Image 1 (cartoon, helix red, strand yellow):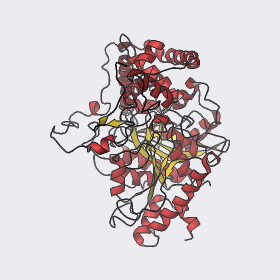
Image 2: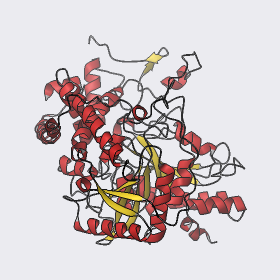
Image 3: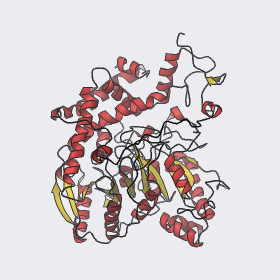
Image 4: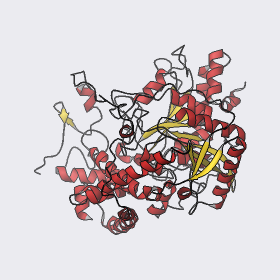
Length: 94
Length: 489
């Protein structure tokens, strides 16, 4: 639990850990039912519709051309902390 | 027409009246605005449908009801689920971590509808990041069902569904990942359509599970659903997964279902469905037969595994999408920004304080499923199961035109009834998740009442069958004559 919480960058309070473990176990038990299926030769889905419509989706990616983007002041306008035209964050070494 | 009658008009009727000059767009907007503002002001004493309501009728610009003289939806107000980005207007996805966030741009589908002449009336309440089936997971309070205020409206587009059902908005935008349009539409007695995956741009929708999320209409009737959808679909260069829709969406006119073959999957119409819901479903099937349709059994053998696959795929994608909420670029930062702690603690504290319990649960589940050594066992297997589920539908559509199921296993349940049991809550999506995984369009229409509460009928068709689906739904709607699809407040 705590390892996964660390991976998710999520702090869990003491009283959140036990209920979370119990609820996740119940869900994992339910999802484990797909182990009953024989899926070894089945390809995984990527784009669920496009893969069934050959030829419909080609060149879905736009050309990689420079275009105007969000102005700096707009990009920074919603940030919790800003300094010298950039996002201000605590030091990773602190 | 008196101002108090204006909200009785369907959106299509309002469009026609405005175009004919017999209705003022401004008057219509103000009528809805004052109703929506009263609900907003009442907070949880009201239905709590909205997280933001326009403070006044827009005087100029794209949102002014007088703008776009020739626009096809000119002057009709639109309620939009909170998770669509709307420039300068709070877009919080029901989350404390985005409280007060005002995006610098507008979602493509909302911009498209503004170009078609709609005016932004309000943002609607929802489950946090669209994770929920009852609208009890919103940081901005629960939404109540206008049919019975002690019951849930469904979720995650609960505010949109309740607002349309209560006549607080003529129509609304929602999003559907595993049933989040269809399920609340069913529980509130209105129409909800999840389009083919890729038919509507996701650009500017605050993401939950990107391979499943799809925007769609919540409306009072099938005609309005077709009208709104007609101005939503199309390829968008900003969303590489969006697809060009083959041809326009047409207004539905069918009266009969002669020659239409309807498939009923045993897997989704038996065990676990409330008796009253099943009775409404079978009455609707009988009505379809009277209209000339043939009803036959079909098999979706992998559908019972859909929920398992979904509760791996959706949380996995969510855990990745929600990594962006880190207190750096927007939204909440925990602690005093002037006296920050170290970076890692800022991240973990921000996410602890900003996310609600259900979102944390899904982030944990998804992170676990994607973690080193577990990817193939969970995400990989679930994507393979998804292929089998989509193949089941493709095989069934060789034999039938549409698949019919109840939209939900039960009618609207009581507030608080399922909040302690995540798994019981997830089972609400049992009949809607298979279509989401297959990426196919599905519509819910009201087909009657059980214990005085609406029952939803779900029709699903192959990818891009929206026109045929809407036509069949319209024929059934006209014949069923559901009398509850009008303002409840």
